Image 1 (cartoon, one colour):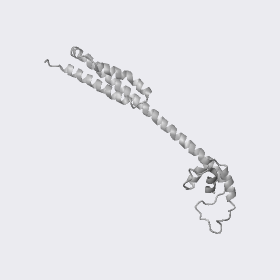
Image 2: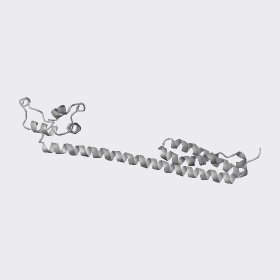
Image 3: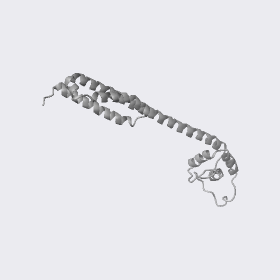
Image 4: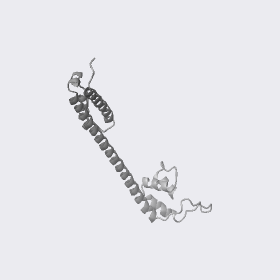
Length: 181
């Protein structure tokens, strides 16, 4: 058995590194969006081709084989890093967009509830009702009920949540108005 030269050993190591890089990249692309994975595919193929070298060629041209494998590995690693960064940037942008939508929905709901409540004077929600007044209507109740009737069910649920009430999620609009007034 003939001894291998230093250049041949370096070429073998470079080929193995290219093969391993191609395997890692293939595994990484499974987690990426299809568009980003398609951009990396040619670099994976290049690394596989650089790793698929015959012993005869490795022995005959070790430096050229080393350069080709190392170049393919570098290009593949750059492409994978770029694709991962793009995917992370896109997912962060989507998360930020969802947060903005959620905040704008909450703000619009709060704006819709706030003017109706500001126009209607309300009795304190936590105040205990005296036994003598329990049977009679307070003078503010009809006004509050008509102000609440102008709100939607979603807005009434938000108002019930803010008032600290529980069990409001399945109530009808009339039941929600009764709960809040």
